[in-house]
Amino acid sequence: MPFNDETVLRIREFFLDKGANFYEKKMFSGVCFMVNDKMCCGTHINKKTGEDMLMCRIGPDAHETALEKDYVVPMEFTGKPMIGYIYVYEGGFTTARDLAYWLQLCLDFNPIAKASKK
Image (cartoon, rainbow, N blue to C red):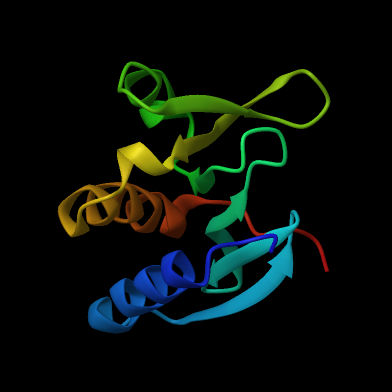
């Protein structure tokens, strides 16, 4: 299973509670949540460790502070960190409060995030 269905449900419920304009899209070997037609966050399973991971698009201003927290690593695809994107391992979002913290950072950045070209 490339993603944890329970994590997808938790994220979906958060966005529904917030009244966010979102939809889900399978990508990055998991599920990505698009808010206002822009990538906001997502979830997948780390292929090496089997751990559930939350992908967060939080922007460059929040990036360094986020990396100081436990369970957080930079998002890398080509060996180079993507500034403004992080992964949070499952230990960092086990509680509803922890998950809401990360998802709210994503929502806060979303209005100024650039949309990808179609």
